[in-house]
Amino acid sequence: MESVPEVRVLGLRTLDQHELRDSIPTDNLTFEPQIPAERAGTSYEPATVIAVVLLSSAALNGLAAWVLKKRHRKDVSIEIEKKKPDGSYERVAVTVHMSESSTKADVVRAVGAQLGVDPSVLAAAVGNR
Image 1 (tube, rainbow, N blue to C red):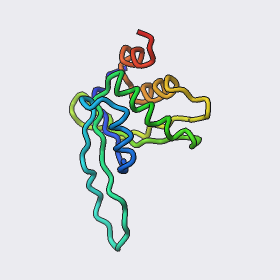
Image 2 (image 1 turned 45 degrees about the vertical axis):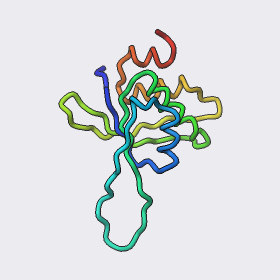
Image 3 (image 1 turned 135 degrees about the vertical axis):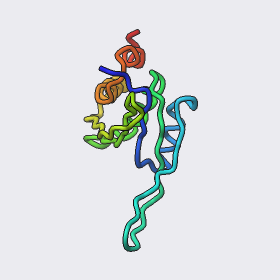
């Protein structure tokens, strides 16, 4: 499985942005404005941002901590773009099945498996060095 050094988490609101800042080391995280597509009519949509995350064991743990905050939902889906070796991005929906007994290690494994994270990074993130 190939390593994914960078992912972009799409459609984040202000609260998500603050929670990710609290969970992921600053050297692994930046934010970009998300430019919405032009829409006809007068519908209002809140401003969203994109989190650019350089995947490390600490960043993977931070993403898992953020997902765990949403454990009241049965399934948590996150729209993510994986950076490919050629520099292009592939859009995927990462879905984590949650329960009250879900642990951070469970979420790290689920997210890491769906993103194709390098096994050594995944092992470091769950504490199996």
